[in-house]
Image 1 (tube, one colour):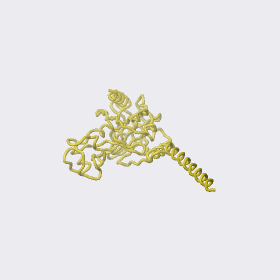
Image 2: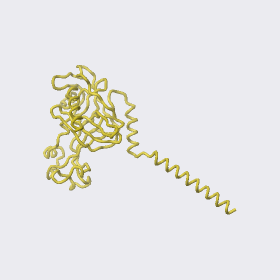
Image 3: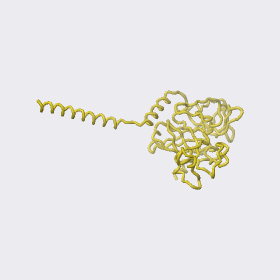
Image 4: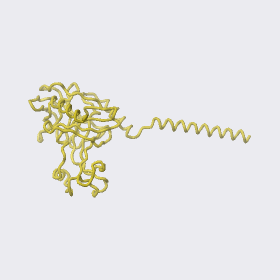
Length: 283
């Protein structure tokens, strides 16, 4: 009787052990981090929207004074004392802009996004005081970040052209697969064409929101295109999209007292800039 009972207990233990191993195995195989789940959820949510814009391609751009410890103001990183790679914690917000992914390297999880060059320009010590009202001992290190699919990434590099006010930023994300390649229009928009943009003006960014703006093309001259559409501080860098989902401009300037007039580069200028930027990056 004792032997039979022992065999039953032993059999039950082994069965439980096997089940535990199987469950653990399956759990490890199908495990997703909270970031993976968040990105998948956002992708599903953004795909429900209809329109000419790709919600997943929008990125929110932000600059911060960097520190080694975001809880300690005395640990601010300075250009003459620290290395940029050693300073990973954003401390003081400086400025923001909008951006739009134009090219995706899914093999290397690398994303290329276009924005405004005046945002990419280095921020001087005097400009930092104007925006933060903080007097720094010397020129602090300013970090560039891109918010994409629920996560924030440090921008690896950027190339800009001040003449056309265009900048291409590069960063990596394991969720690069959710973005799409975007074409630049072959011709200028005509007066009266419908135009669209996603922006995050005045730091008004939230992971689950996508602020869609619509307007009309006012036409183009030899140097730039104009649009009657909402734009203000933080709208800089927004890609302007036509009915075919192509980029026709990138917002560079907006009227201050009348926030429904914006100006940006022409399609030909954007295409030429991107070709030069990609060629430079390949060197």
